[in-house]
Image (cartoon, rainbow, N blue to C red; front, side):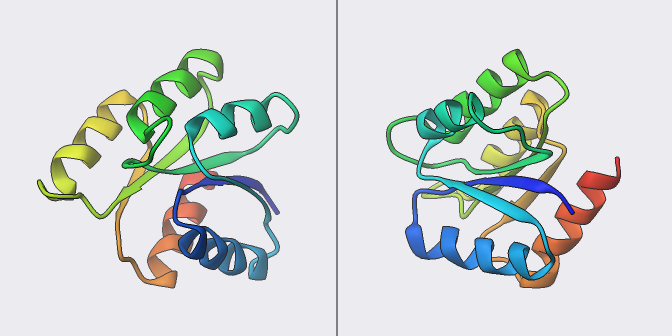
Length: 122
């Protein structure tokens, strides 16, 4: 299937997403933040990146901008629970920066798989 990178600072969330995606026969590379993801992408080629927005070290907005600069055709799904202001502001900005799809956390397994499948098809 596809090579997918999941960038998520919450280890349990990252592990859960990895399990869901691997059950669909995707290969998954996990990263704790955007900076770690940048380093991993120098060694691995991926078909899709799923990134959290609110993370320490390097947050998702900066990560999306960097990925789109170095990998303009990179397919990206952005996700967030939204923090104090709610998710809409963050996810709208993520779309303007180049994310193809967005997810509001918490999300259902089916919502994750639908977003992944539709993004990979485009």
